[in-house]
Image (cartoon, rainbow, N blue to C red):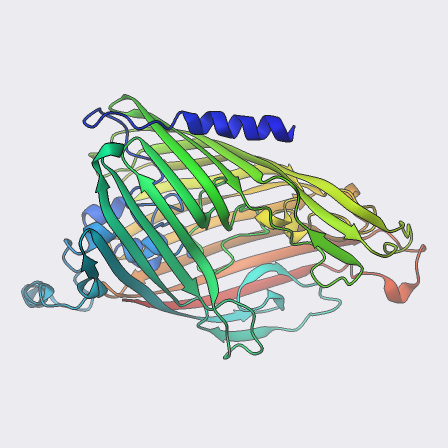
Length: 495
């Protein structure tokens, strides 16, 4: 199976021969600006929640965790005039427009030498979060802790999602169909830390890419190929472990685009990506180890609709991955089975996914994803559970999420959605069996650089313990559900 998967990825990559310069090819559907950008450069993009997929324009967009394109497409941002703040009267508009040419942008600090251009960007990003019951990990929510252990409420102020990055571009390569060679490095402050006010750096993106209208090659760390959408929730967790699959990892990616008509285009994406092992991080009796082959990811997408209108095209995609995770079980497993030590244990990880992005009007639309698979903890599936420590089998799970959005004005936006992750109960003896959330928010672009929003979400996490009567009572895991209403006020200043 592994050799077939790698062979398919190689075959897909061989289709990426650049087309002759001037041949008409579809623009990649995953690399577009949000629909509101034409009329307002800051409408949704300023909040980091630009419509559509994780990669839109030069910098990715998508949900609140998407990073880059939340600051706008690099080439376009310097050409667009600032959005007039909502608190200015019509008479003040001319003054704002007159000052636009003198306003400071980090693009003005771009370092240029020959064909090399380096542009800094960033955001100061802070949240105030109150939860009626304690959630994991706390500053944002992946699931609710059991009320048996953590039934109290909690409040946090957090600025660690602030970030800084550099975009590097070296210009076009005529011998490769006019492809652009460029790269990015981006960090935030969600690395390991002693206390919340002594945060360490975390690498978000570090990659080089070569792209023209027909193909794209990428090497480095960025978003997964599978399940490329992100819900527009203010929660930094972006619905992970509650229906939204996919994160960031190092990969070699190849993309190819075909056009069939003015309204129809197809994109094929494949990647070989680094295997990440997340289970049993603190268990001294288990040693995590990588497999001897990379994860293979792929996606086939069909985009339908014209791009020269005020409504974005619709896109439907089919994606999946396959790989392995490895462990050395150095000691006997948990009771009651007490499985013996085992060296070089291997467990398959896989997923099959569908994503849909459906603008209905220029202001209103729907997006969502569904998935099924096994051993998905490294992709934020299975509610963070990939392999059961008691029976040592992969945990199967299924779920998804959906969202409706409406733009009241170019600066006022509303989103409402639902997500769930439902692992197969028979695959493990104790742990989280069901996780769901509802959310609704209102987002305001106060100015071109300053954005704020308020979100209310409801979370419910169910637990099971099937070892009752087989082990001592004081060793049983909690079974009471966790339920919480979470209030999140977000403010972000871009630069």
